[in-house]
Image 1 (spheres, rainbow, N blue to C red):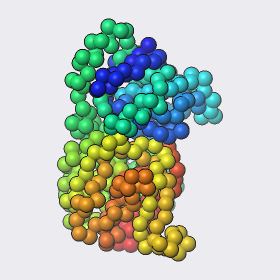
Image 2 (cartoon, rainbow, N blue to C red):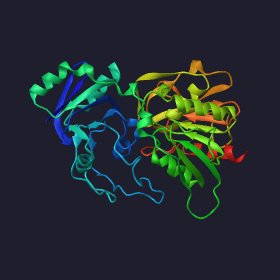
Image 3 (cartoon, rainbow, N blue to C red):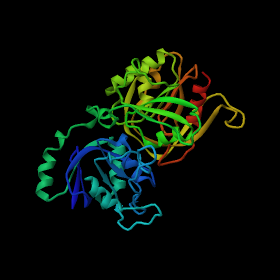
Image 4 (cartoon, rainbow, N blue to C red):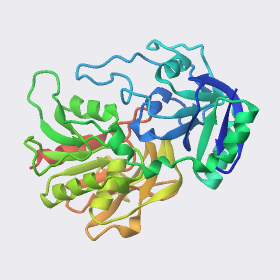
Length: 380
């Protein structure tokens, strides 16, 4: 047995799987139908207990933990599981997939990650939508433990009060060269704020040299050669990343092309004097529609200059559209709640998006944005 106790005292009980241990964190939900290995290894989930709304999780197992030719994970979005726990309606230990090497249960045991199955995830998700994400505690339990923990539930530390980016960022600069023997088409400084590995794969497949650097890397003293600055996704409150914000301001002042994804979108807004706020329950899933608002390009967009793409997302904070300074414009909006999904400077040299063009999991509608930034760098 195991139980989830929310900050308001609400309790959901079910069966324990994975590691039999207690944990706590911010309880959030993901609406994707597939992609649990990628989501669980996404550093943006650091400090969170993840609820999967799709009723069956684990049925296609988990791939191997082998590394690719560049020395990072071949199949996952990082080399570790970053969620503190997962909650599912039904967990399957029988799995079938050509690339599966382990059950979800065994993988979680290996990494010390607890889970609860047999939960009414629809009721739990509805509560989080109505009241907003909240802190919670998982206990591998007995009734006495539940009673004791319920009284102490308000003492759970909020992970967003910590600098989670510093926990998941690399500790030193690492350079990756594209394979194939041809000359790289460009080179970027990639700020690792919790970078998903398919972002690295996406740049390398395009022939770009990637200098992956820590979140507080000093551009002013850098001896690396680069054509642009990229800022990755990552966990927590963007206002905790003051060092990254300062480095982005330096890049903008030097007119260095700059591109951000997810947390990078929020950091770019803060760097130019804008503001961010916390969403009630965030956007986490592989089915978020976003409207691109830009002049029409023949053959690609409608006559009104807009088009809709379906995107993969994982974030709990957003950019305040009303606080953007002169020269900056909303580039993408969320079709469901009209929140900002991207910003762009009128020069076209600096832009960012809130969603994930690299997908994994999710649709690849937005993959062209990597090519767009590559085009900006090659025009210099």
